[in-house]
View (cartoon, rainbow, N blue to C red):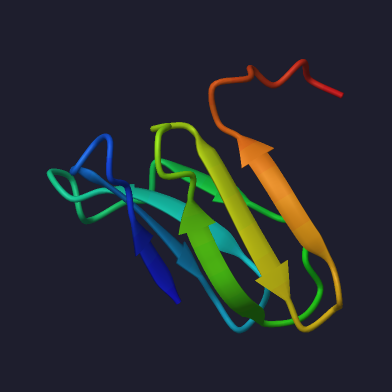
Length: 77
């Protein structure tokens, strides 16, 4: 599954069968900008918020929906 960002046309999100979510910048396609590990089953749906370049939602076969705000910094925990 993939989702293009409507606010920032360079950003793409992908969801994989192993549950991994990756954020890509199409100007630098060799390496993902970010990898998100939470889901334990395949991603069934992924979508950037229509009016934001940093909010992303993903649904998985593990029966969970996650909402990610990529603008929030990791606090190391």
